[in-house]
Length: 200
Image 1 (tube, helix red, strand yellow):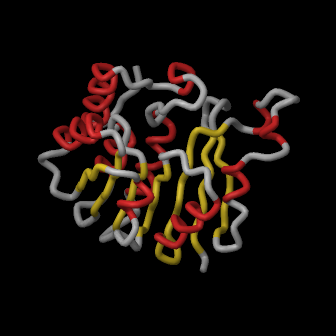
Image 2: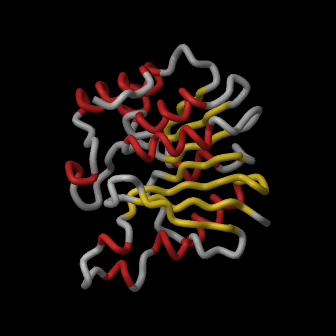
């Protein structure tokens, strides 16, 4: 059995109680799912290096990604996470009530995060699909800050006729001249992340 930080395990329990999908397969096309364990470990690794910094999460969901980040970030770091679903936001707010470093806010992530930066790390998990919105997210990063998007399928794992092989919105975003970016394939070889560092 895999080991998880206690906060992550508690968030997973809450997700199951709330009927929040733990995997992309459970969620189905176009529906939200929880942060995968390998994504969480990657976020935790980045968060651990944000001493004195500010982290933002767009799309709290059931708080599993939030739990990974909060469990690893230094004591002098802050995390602001935004969720449009009041029921989920309230659930995660209660889960994290004893951690003053974490603020759970309700509302459209793009709107409520505006003016909250600059961020050292952004986990953009709210389904951003607009180029202008993505550019706004990059602007919320401090120079050297990182942005992470998940829920991608590695190109080698795609069906030969997948339209994403020729045009994938998320991958197109990460060609921004303001980022140095790469794709990180997770150990299951079925999921990947896009990670970019703001250079200008």
